[in-house]
Structures are given as C-alpha cells and as structure tokens.
Length: 165
Image (cartoon, rainbow, N blue to C red):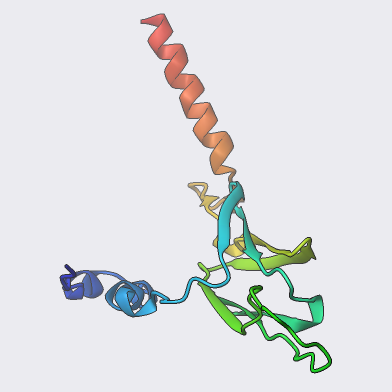
C-alpha cells in the first residue's frame, strides 16, 4: 500500500532540492515493469560505481549509451537477420532501454562490452570550487582541506585522550 507524503514543509526550508523532492514524489511512476536486460549495480570505491548489464547476443554497434545531466540511458536494438530460418528462437533479441538516475557530479568514465556483459564505469567528481575549504580568521586566504585526513586526525586525538584518562 502506497501513501503519499507531503514534502511541502521541507520544500519551504531548503534550497536546491526540488529535483530530489520531485523524484521522491513520483517514485512509483519511475519503476519499470520490464526487467530486461538484467543488471548489477556495484560500488567499486568511495566515489566510483559500476553498472553491468547482461546483453547477450548484442554487438557493440547495436548498443547506445547516452549520458545526459543526471541521467544515463542504455538502449539496444538488434538488427534483423533475414537470411536465417529458426525452428525455435529462445534467445531474447528484443529492443531495450534502461534508464539510471545519476546524482550531481557523477560522470561516465568508461564502457566495455565483453562476453555479453556491458560494464559502465561511473565516477563522482566534485569540482574544486565545491569542496570544503578552511577559512582562516584575520584575512588569510581560504585553504582546501581533506575531510578524510581531518576525520582521521580527530579519531586519533580522541583515541589518545581516552587512553590517557
């Protein structure tokens, strides 16, 4: 049973999240009834992902991959071979289209077709201007910071204090 949730209080108190709220509100309509071709989505690193689609029987020239802003579309259309006469045809050769919503700053890095499996590599690259910076008090220039090293430093400081106590 699906209930609608009212996001208007959140819309009033946030800026720039309209696309996210639209996506959440229309979540039921985005579900695809067709599960062809099957795919895997895996995380390969902190900011990298891989989508693998099972596209057996399709050649490289029969598959199109289109990356738009916040959308990846993988489609395939098999060319008809009129010179063959099949007694039974059990291998799926129907046209397909798979759509994947991408977060901001996620870009397609590479695509490879091997042994009937199409792998699409994705990477999130945040622009330098969007990364956090440490602001010096007293008119100094802003310095970029590495959040992971800052977090490790805080964890090390906390471990040292707990051992001393």
